[in-house]
Amino acid sequence: SVTDNNGNSNTCQAIINIVDEIKPTLTCPEDMLVNTEPGECGAYVSLPKAAPFDICGINDLKSRYQAVSADGTPSEAWSSWANDQSGFFSVGFYQIQWRAMDNSDNQGFCSYTLEVRDEEAVAVFSELEIEGETSSYSTPDLPAVTAEANMFSISLHTQLAIQVSPNPFVDETRIQFSLEQAQEVSLAIYNLQGQLVKQLVDGQLDAGEQQQQWDGTDWSGNRLPSGGYLVRLRIEEEVVNKKVLLLHD
Image 1: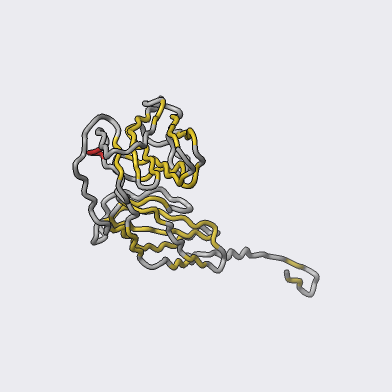
Image 2: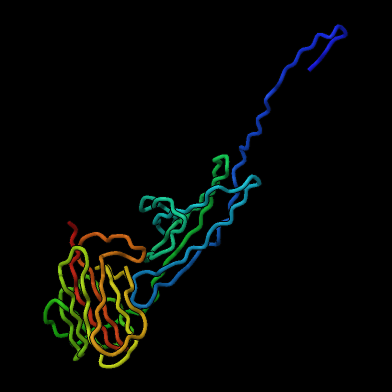
């Protein structure tokens, strides 16, 4: 605003925009090497987060992953962005990418490599008796039965038995078995690639008739694709597997 000696005045104004065009910085964790879990063709991995920084604040932090070859060449498409991609990873190499977004929608990225390595010794089966649709065996620390063995019954004089009904099922199936005494029990669902998709029981149960339900979902409650799955019951050194068929409406 200005006024001359005769009292005449005038004003003007200017608008100043402060624009943030600086991308956030991200510090990613070191590359990870994880061994497969016993009896698994992969491992459940808790992925560490990247550390973001922006002087004006971080509005969003998400990650995604893709399978890659040993030299880093992508072999699959990227997953969708999510807050946490921790979960089951099959044997192989993966690129884990983190994205930070500030309040001005500037984006910064960083990535690291996850390797899931299989160093578990091979298990040998011998003197197996082929019977029918179920597979059962009594031996310590054996891997999950693979797709090639799912259609047979392998019996090594175990008394352990499991019933799954209805089978096939759409909404929910009941898994029944009996315990002569209170025991530590593991009851889990595997896909036909031998990957653990959901743990139903992992602890001590009282003696007597037992019943558990499975609604066809994974660890996160997501509906699994239709197809064959394996119900595996393990009590001490005894393991029995039962194939179950999940159908969709």
